[in-house]
Image 1: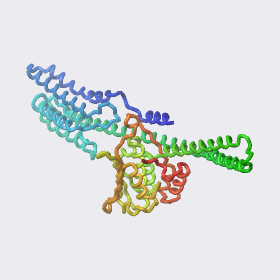
Image 2: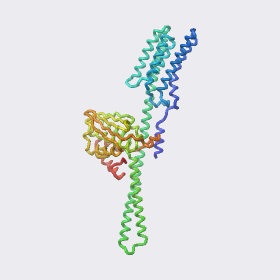
Image 3: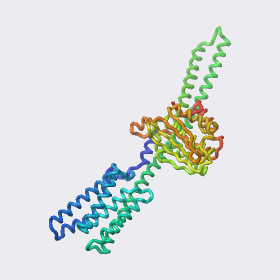
Image 4: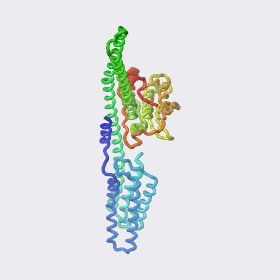
Length: 459
């Protein structure tokens, strides 16, 4: 079962291309624009010193451009990995612009093709947020125009031949960066869907295991107890001359009862493990519940992806915290916006849920939260794993903060995916409607399947 789920998740997260191929292919393809100035220098009727200067400047420019591409492009060459902008990229970009300016104005106006690379470097380096990369391409376009038009021998036709590649090279680079972001988001979405599918399958298995095997073992245990009473009653009716083999039969029936009772306990523990709360399921449930309640949710994608990263008990505590916070926001806060954030800091995994309503204080201690006695039960869950819970904040920015020790799961420590499953059935409707009937039914189901009111094995 787990093998199938894990295999499905791996297949649902495809990798694009071979490592390193796209890293240099896209960067090197623009070098075609350096062919024209180099050819013109070769055939120019100028001194060897002038040609040597042009070759040296061209080589320096190519090296700086290659260094910029190297520090920005992903190490693995995967288009699904968003580009990064380290600090060293900024002086490299400035160096490209300076070399292009000096070369165009004072060395050789044929070197104006360098501005194409400045446009590419600008599209690679500037942030995508707020359109800054687009504005940067416009600035490069303007600088190129100021440097090229005053040069001797440059007409409007020559300017247009340089202007269009410079501008559109920057735009195409920005498009590639945005494509990388979309591919990364799609990969995360597919992985989340695969995890939810694995969770549903394990939930189905847990239900079948409880309903079929659990019921049969309960009947066997009951029949064994009844047989013991009948055998003891037979022995009591004839204490002086009991039937032969009665004591041995009674001992065998007692063993049957003990084995069946232990098997029933083990199955309930297994079902409880299958139903452990996970962040990916609770995030999906939170989206559905808040959308039904007409509340906007701003959530960090890392919250859902964090499933399997932390120890199961710690993740379960965080998942229950998210569930309890969303429940109370819907029922008590009258909020219009909720923000969910997960950070690893100071040896802790910290989950923060903010809302712009009345807050969560109204729900504290009311005992109507899902899966426990409200926030008091949630605090007990966190205490059991060495975590902490804080609630408070000014009007207009109320928050619930749940922190647990940042201990990785065994699978995450080994580098493999941990696909802890959970049940989310019925939770969305219970949150959206605000009724207590679903919560009561969930607690009754937990008591029936696990022999306790808490289905999460914490501590």
